[in-house]
Length: 458
Image (tube, rainbow, N blue to C red):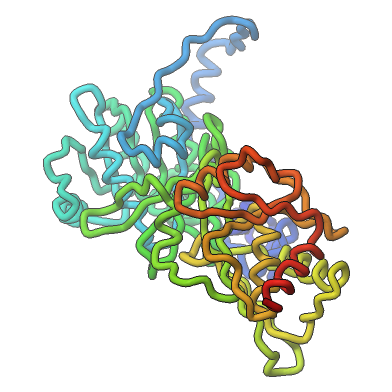
C-alpha cells in the first residue's frame, strides 16, 4: 500500500497516480512512475493571503481596442531572428532544446553577447557549468569583452530574487532541469520541479516584460525532457539539431506564437563558434561530384526559404530472406508508400531487394514534395542509370500514382537556377515556358519510370 503522503508522478507525461505501476495508464510509457511527496504549488501561500486581504476583481477590456505594437529585440544573428519571426519579443518565454554538445550554450552565449549593451541588460545563468567554464568559452569565442552578467546558481528562489533586483531585459537559464525549489520535496530534474520552476520563470517574464530563454535537455527520442506542459507554458519551442560529424547545425521552430513554425536557421560550427549560413543549399551540396545512379538533388522548401539537398538511394540484393528498409533523414512510412506506388501503379518490382535511403548532410526532410525525388533516386539506383547532373527533382506522389503540384514552385526553380542547375523534373502543372530553367513536367509516376528506362537504354 502506498503511504497517504506520497504520490507517483509519470516522468514522461506528468500525470499523478495514487500507487505505483509498471506502466503509466495515461501515456503508456513503462517504468516512468517516480514517488514524490505532494506539496503546495509555488506562490499559493502568498496569493491566498492577498485574496484574503482584498476582494478579487477581474479586469475586462474591449476586444477592438488598439494595442501598441511592442518593438522586437533584434539579436544581430539573422538566422536566429528569422526563426523567431523577426526578432525576440519582450515578455516572451522561449524553450530551446537539443542533443548534448550540439552547441546550445555556444549559440545562446553568442546571442547574449550580441544584444548586451547600454540599453539592454543581459544575464546568463548556468546551472550546469561554473563561472570559470563559461568565461573560458567566451574567451575562446572572442566574447570576453561583452557586458554580459554571469551567474552560476540552481536555487529558483535565489535566481528570482536576483532577477527582481537586477531588472534584466533578457535572461538565459541553462538549463531548466538543474533548477530546484525548496517548496518542493522532489529532486531537481523531476517532473514536479521542472514544471514548477518553469511556471515561476514564465510568470516573471510576463510580469517584468523580460525575454526568458530556457534551455531544455532532450530524451533519446529527441524530444525535450520533462512534462509536455512546459512546452505549452512557453511562447516558442526551438530545436537545435544536426549531426556531430557534420559542421552545420539547424535551428528549427516547432512552436512560435509570434511567427511561423516552419522556418529554419542554418549555422556552421567553427573554431570561433557558430557562424551563419546565408545560402544553405550551397552547404548541403558541397562536395557533390559527378552524377551517379541513385543520387538526386531535391528542390525543397524550409519555411519561406528554398533549400536544395541531395537524396541518395541504394537498391541492393537482399542478403537474407526479409529485405531491409533503412532510412536516414526521411519518414520511413512515406518511403513504404512510395515503394507501394512504384510496384502497384508502375509495375516496378523491387520488393525482394534491400533499399537504403539517406538525405546527405544529415538534413531531416518532412515535406511531401520529396516523394518524386525519392522515387527517382530509387528507380535510378535499381536501373543503374544516373539522372542529369544539372537537374533537380520535386513533386508529391498520390496513392493513385499521379504527381500532384506543390507550392512555391517558382522559388524552387529560381534557387536551382542560381546554383547553376539547368533543368528540373517536376509536376506537369509546374511546367511553364517562363520558368528560369527547363522543366520536364510529369503527370504520373509511371512516366518517371519510363523516362529513366529510356535513359538506361541510351
